[in-house]
Length: 178
Image (cartoon, rainbow, N blue to C red; front, side, top):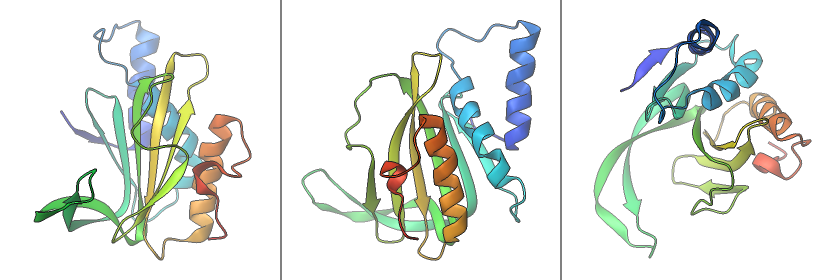
């Protein structure tokens, strides 16, 4: 089930649940993505239009969208074969960004090596894994951005994400001259 809430609204709902002592279902872990959202909030709060946040996958995945756009994309298989059928995919417009945070068990290995930048026809995506302090969880993070996304904004987003890892950002989340 997808719900659309402001970043702070989600943090407040999770905080209220924790403070009230209400128990979440055993398989539902939503605090991790909210922690990342809270870390990014100082960068996101003044953006116009407002950043849209969508929780999915029983609260384990958070998507933050700023100036998103729907694209027709031809999928590419692991062998390199390009699909004849295009599908709709939401990504960042040429000036926007999309941050996807997926909660997973600490140490889980993903198909793509991290950190790295994946270049797609319409946007680029920085991929990295952030261990969540004090938990047995990690956040698999994708920062997708368009060709004209504000370099200062990208630098601030990368710095906040790198700070969660306890690094300077050099080499992590593909710190570029952008």
